[in-house]
Length: 83
Image (cartoon, rainbow, N blue to C red; front, side, top):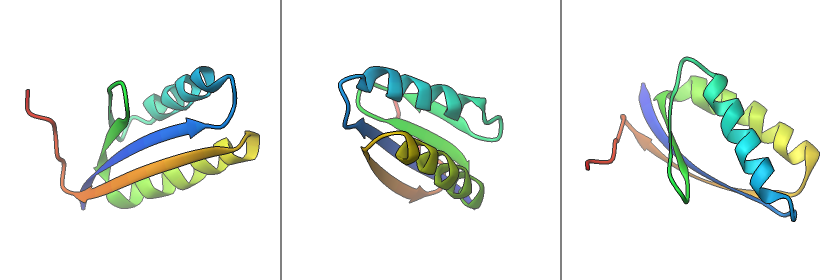
């Protein structure tokens, strides 16, 4: 099943920009998902189960390194912003 997941990462550290940029770099390594980023959040598109497992692993790594808040919205299907 295809899905859309919107993710916002809020690192609780003064160096929050580098944490967010590093997380985005990691997401873009995964070739089986499409990543779109704007000023407030990132949307990923792809297979639901694949993305949930990938996010579980990558969020775990973020939480191992520092305190952070991650907000996610999940929708069935690929929902792209219409310009």
